[in-house]
Structures are given as structure tokens and as C-alpha cells.
Length: 251
Image 1 (cartoon, rainbow, N blue to C red):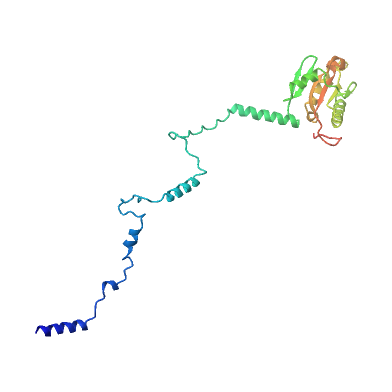
Image 2: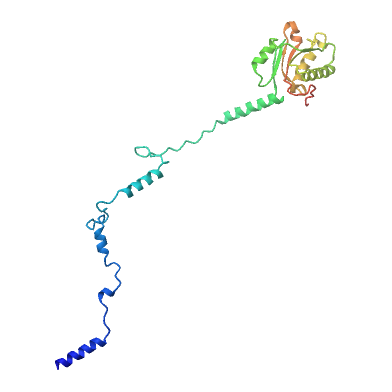
């Protein structure tokens, strides 16, 4: 009986497929522990986050060099605690009266250049002086003293008021076109006129301050005694900057 049972079991074992052995499976990591054990740079005893003993510092050096190169153009912050930058105070506007004075001064300068500015006149019993607003007092003082040599003169004796004005206008224009700077005009004291009033002298002062002569005249002053005294005027003309010799100023 026992022999028969053994034969049956033996035949069943032969008919059943044989199981593959353990060595027949694909085991790529079977010898990994052997390779790791051969690498001396790997330490399995270190804690997590720690570098194994014997690790090279080349990686740290490379990172340090890269960081220094990246921070080349960066300026370090000053030492000490950071401070807040104070807010710049708002720009103060000039006072209104100062701005008004600047505007008036600029307007006076423009009028002085263009010939549209008013005249300042100083009148006494004998002598009369006048100048455009903004003219240097030094120039007027020199004109009063006769320090400017006159280049032409005009005598108005024997002319009535109308003829005298036309003659003065032609004379001033001609002298301005000739680039003269100082001229002498003699209206007289009016001793031979009706009521012994200096009609031409008073009219001459007004003509200087009116168009067209106001655009050509800078200042006038009573002449020195040797040039006619109170019966004559030094007249300072503007500088003629035109290229042509003949200039007809605008009225």
C-alpha cells in the first residue's frame, strides 16, 4: 500500500508544471547593497540632514563663488539700525508781493527795450531832466554833466510850435539813422515869445515822451551853461542795431 501511494504521488509530481526557482526572477537591485558597501563616501550611520563624513567641499565652494559673483554690483547696507528717510518739505512759494515785483520789473525791462515804457521827469524852475523808467541813474548823471559829446545840434529859434515839432521829428530820425547817440536841441528860453513863456521848451519835453520820438529817445537833460544852459537839451538816443543806414522807426 505504501509503495502504491508513493508511485501515485511521484506521477502527479511529474505531471504538474514545475515552479521556477527564486533565481529565475528579474532582480536588478539584488547586488545594490554590495555596491553601496564598496563606496567609502556613503555613511549609513549619519542622521537625516547631516552631511556624511568625508564629503568633499567643492559643492560649497562653487555655491559661494556663484553667490559672490551675483552680488558684485550690490552695495551693502550701512551698519546700524535702519532709519526712515524723512519726507522732503514742500517747496515754499514766494510771497505774492515778491512775485508781483518780479513781474513789474520784467515788464519795465521789456518797455525799456521796446521803447514803450513811460518817462520819469524831474522839473525845476530852470532845469528839466527826463529818462525812460529803468535807465541806469549813472547814465542820466553823466548826461546832466555833459560827459556825452553831442554829434549834431538843432536850433529852433524863430519856429512856431507846429514847424518846430516837424523839424525835431525829422532831426531825431536822421540822427538815429546815422547812429548818433547824443545830440543837442536848442528850443530857447522863450524870452521873445508871447507872455514870455517857454512854449517850445515845454512842447519839446512832451514830444520826447510821445510817439514817434519815445521809441528813439532814452533820456534828455538841460544842457550845461556853455552849451545853452536851461535853453538847450542834451538828448540821448537809443542804439541803432539795424544793418541798413536808413531806418524809419515805427510810429
